[in-house]
Amino acid sequence: MSDSDSDPNAKLFDGLEKIYRRDCKDQTDFIFFHPYEYGLTATSPDARQYTEEESSALERRDFETRIFITAYVYAGRATFIRTHFTDNHKTDNVILNIVRDYLKAAHGTENFTAAKSSLSEMLTMSMECNESDYFSFALTVASGLSNMAENTSFQRHEAILNNGEDIDLVRRKLCLIMHVLFEQIENSNYLNRGDGSNIYRLVYCSTQITKKNQQLKLLPLFSFLLQVCLTVFVVFENITSFPNVIHSGGLLNAIPNFYQNFVLAILTFAYSALIALPSVKETRNAFQLYGEIGMIQMMDFCVNSILPIVLLFSGFLIILLSDSFIESVLNTAALLFIPEIDDQLPSLLGYTDSVIYKRYLTFTAMKKFDHICLLKDEQITEKCLRLLNDAIGVQFSDFYLTNWPEQGATPGKGIHFQPYQVREGITIDGVQMGHQLSPSTIVTEKCLIRKIVWSYTVSEKHDRSTKPRIGYLRLEMLNGRQVVVNMKTLNRTISVHDKYHSMEGVFIITTFQMSSSILRLRICGSYDALDFEKAFDYYSLWDVSQHARALLHKHAEKERKAHRRVTKESSYRSYEGFESERTHNQVDIFVNNELLDP
Image (cartoon, rainbow, N blue to C red):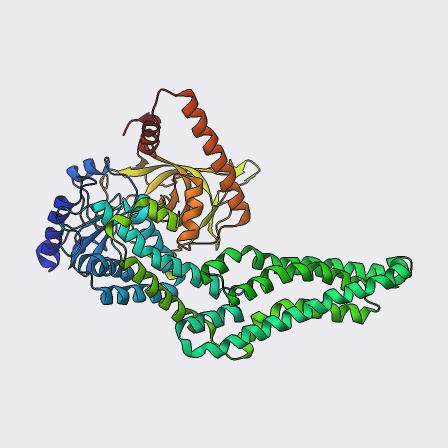
């Protein structure tokens, strides 16, 4: 191992250790890596090994990721990630440092100009950075903000946390100011999706930024009148056609091409329903964007929530009542065109909607920050935050089960950072063909894990390795299936440790890499199914499929019934006592398959 004297930052980290021991009260077992100790492989002769004292400390540390924020910069960092393996986990994520600058300016020095600069910088970087880098950043921050930022600690300094100041108040303030960021990122994702942008929202955002653009309000008015007028004509055509149908003695007699029209009408109905459903379902997102009821908001609601339903049924009849094949085709094309007018207008007029939306989101973030600055300390309560958004401070954690740097995807190095689907292997002619853990773009039901049990490898030369590998992994899926991954190696000096670790809740794998044993494993999740869903929506993480959401709700109902049953059967135990035991056993330790009290 290189001598610490050769690294100019070593003394700085010695000072950081003292600050941790003085100001970090959530645990007393600290483990630090100096910069010169990174970059060595586990089998390198100079590789860092845990000392006997550190190995003992590891047994008392859980796996939740935590954050420590300092007043000063140490070797280029002021926001430190704390994992099971070390209290200064390696990361090159620059956005984390801006979180500290944001808090320092907003709370410590009350330099609101600097705070707005940091907020604008974070918002811009989050919207423009690589998607996987944002997800990694969001998971780290989400873990720190878990349980009202219970996993975040601060250096006792007037620029961050004054001596005698309530740390829980500072934690709530951190949750509140970070809420401004994550709310705008959610709006950004909604607006920049294909079905989230239209002329109503574009003009609304543009006119909010500056009052000089008020004449643009004529554009949504034009689109609204055109779409409503076309829809009214469709409805009137149906009304005027029915007397002819009744006079002819029914549909079959009135329409010579009834059966052919019926097939096209059904297909168009199904397609129109697929188009209309997302618009109707995203009414809440649209209302959150507007924040108030106004003329543009009402026009948007009518065109994207009411008109599609009207056209759905009126269009079916129009096609059914068409006199010829070509008329049926023309009616179908016209009916599919009407709902798309407001979506197509921005591009036809040459507007770059992404630029306008970014300006609007930054403008709105500053307004919301101004409002927060006017709040008094006694107003910033947990109840106040829950009323603002019940997902603020939701329990959700990031877990490093192996000791590798915090980072997004690096495909060139075989590192992916996205949800992993777990598929049980098949057996062919009595031979087990192996399980499949593969990256997915969304969270499906095959990604959801109910319980994880694992054990690390041990060897004669590296029994205290700082980069341990996992030799045994058991995944109990939320859908009831179970997958076991075992180490397979020809090296007889390596074996699986007889101590097992376990976590229960709802989790997904975000990084997985395996050779003879598991090299990289990072997961995230909550101990409660509904908290898991809340966190994914609030922090704008990967999309969750409808089947996965249904499975989460089903599991949440089971959890609720189980909780009610345990409370009834153990009525002599207080609610606080039950929750304490549940929390205490979230990370269990097994020795020789027997559960030990940690």
